Amino acid sequence: MQAIKRKKQKERIIENFFLICAFVAVVSVFAITVFVFYNGIKPFVSNSYPLWDFLTGVEWRPGSNMYGIFYMIVGSVLATFGAILIGVPVAIFTAVYISELAGSRIGKVIRFAVELLAGIPSVLYGVFGLGIIVPYVLKISPNAQGESLLATIMVLAIMILPTVVSISETSISVVPKEYREGSYALGASKIQTIFKVVLPAARSGIMTGVILGIGRAIGETMAVMLVCGNPIAGIPTSLFDQIRPLTTNIALEMGYASGVHQELLYSTGVVLFIFIMIINLAVNKLVKAKVGS
Amino acid sequence: MSKSLKKVLVALLVGATVLTLAGCGSSGSTTATTSTNKDAISGEINGGGSTSVQKVIDAAGAEFTALNPDAKFTYSGTGSSDGIKGATAGTYSFGCASRDLKAEEKGSLTELIFAFDGIAVVVNPANTVTNLTTEQVGKIYMGEITNWNEVGGADSPIVVVSREDGSGTRGAFEELVKFEEKLKPDATIKEGNGNVQTTVAGNANAIGYVSLTFVDKTVTAIDVDSVKATVDNVKNKTYKISRPFLAVYDQSKVDDATLAFLDFLMTTEGQAIVEDNGGISAV
Image (cartoon, rainbow over all chains, first blue to last red):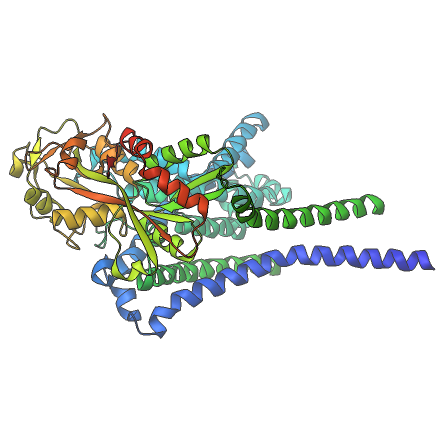
């Protein structure tokens, strides 16, 4: 009797220990959210800077009390969109190749390379971009510098590959074999089967990968900071214009800022946070839809 | 199974307790040792701030800890404003700034000028321009001069490279060249002296500015108002783009080890280290 009781008690202690561990994540996300929002909303509540000017301004000159982030929002969105446009097709075709077409050996090699790509620290992507991509862009650019929207898009397109490839590959590989066999039985070729049967069946999984890729692209900081140019004003109108994404604005100046300047950097973080939350909600919805069907 | 789990738990708890105790011990021991033994300097000196002074301060710190093996020295290059903030808050035992303090930053801080620095205007080695007036540099940074042929160079656009807002070097440069808050909108912004240098080295049309201590063979420092950017010229005050290196600390929070280090910095030996690392002696 006593032994059973002791055993139960022990079980409960261990259970609680696990609960505490699980709480670390919850407490962290809560603390970060509250901290960023509290500091980021302050300047608008205390009227030290008008929200409208902040969201629609196109010039960032802290010394002259000009804090407009509209051109940064445009820059972030364009860079992300461009990265998706280039990166996603490449990633999906890679995933298709690995899971449908490649032999097991070459598939393994490609998968290994993609996994390795995921593990490279982002600052190294930036160094690669600055050393290889920026000088190349400079050669074809009508502008005099190579730091540009185009360079940013190219770095980001490579960076989102691992995320999109691995999630797409997983969802392609769980498409039931019978689907493919049914398609072949109707006389479809391998490529026809992939495009008409396999990809549509894996659609929701691939979309999840794409949205996570968007999240990665919009949130990337270190690599982008080295290749985007970070100008203090100006909405980009061509691929060769420089951009200053929301993330690099925070990273560049947080160490130096004080007062309203610092608070408005938190506000930049809030805007970024809202973007990321929208993306996460979209992922959740997609995953749910997948389970439902 | 359950026994081994218990062991792990106990080990974790013991580990945590030891860590907590160790934490308490190290923070308390500084004052204890300095009060009992006045000859040896021990304790943690934890500075931070301007990246421009990093080379000088790191070298001085290494020498200081070699002389006083019981002292520990760290310096984090996080920017002038951060150094001042850290010194005020007490997170740094001293902060370094490569610009004069703003009125609102002064508070209860004590300032010590331990060196001077020049800011060099740098261009790509392929550039044929060797001299600019302060006014021309200002006009280039404001976007009034946009082609190298306007200042005697080749017919190619000028790529203006500047530093991030809040950088001590940028603040000092804008003030000394007199274009405060008028930087042209499409200037490329790079984080840190090293990045500016890399960018200028990689683009034949670029112009940038870096702390004199950073100039190396990959870029050319041009003459300003026909004065070469050299240590001697900063010292004899003929080179106009120069500024002080400050150490700041809060008199009420500072510990003996930090004061001893700052004293060391001002000795002949300390100033020699300043000079060896491209800084310019303050005494």
